[in-house]
Image (cartoon, rainbow, N blue to C red; front, side):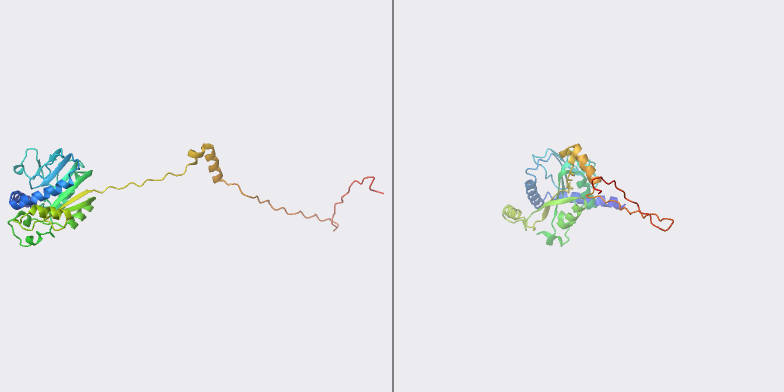
Length: 288
């Protein structure tokens, strides 16, 4: 058996174990806490098309969601005839076709969690929302995971910190809007567990069993370009042409006259310098 078939077989076993876990009293209590936390996020979202990837009963059964798509890895594990049957890292859906994608405790058991996250981000629209739900290793259920007990589904899964999910989401151009925590009851038979759950969710303490991450696609902001000054638009075409002509060939403030050198008198062959006689016509009144 190849590694791919071995991973698929292990993933199918984890899927069945998850379905059995969510039917127990502990699983139903955790499922109800996560549903209440999710209901606050999607109270006024107005989502029309949504996809839910997980092994638990549907959490997106809200009246505000018009079209919900379920998912199952195999045909015999599907609970509805309209369930999407495929591998989680290869969804047969168009790019940016859904307004909401919910990945519910699937990254902990998937053979390739980064591929599942990238595929879920691919089908999420630019204005849509990607919601991830997983077990919190630093919560009140963290010490119980160290026992390596194989009785429960969540103890056998691979727990991820919110910091690692933040790095994975940045790699696919998604930003985390908010992180909520749920599942604050330390023991199964604790009285008034609902009041404790409300108190922990009100203060959003990072001590819950699970985290709920809401992320959106990172959009590039457009930088507006300023228009250059156009004199033709304000002063007219003739004035702008004159201004451009003057700017190209400016007139000098003063002119430089060329220097003129005086001519020397020609020498006489006899050695005497010939001087021109200035004769003037004398008037008869001047001469006596």
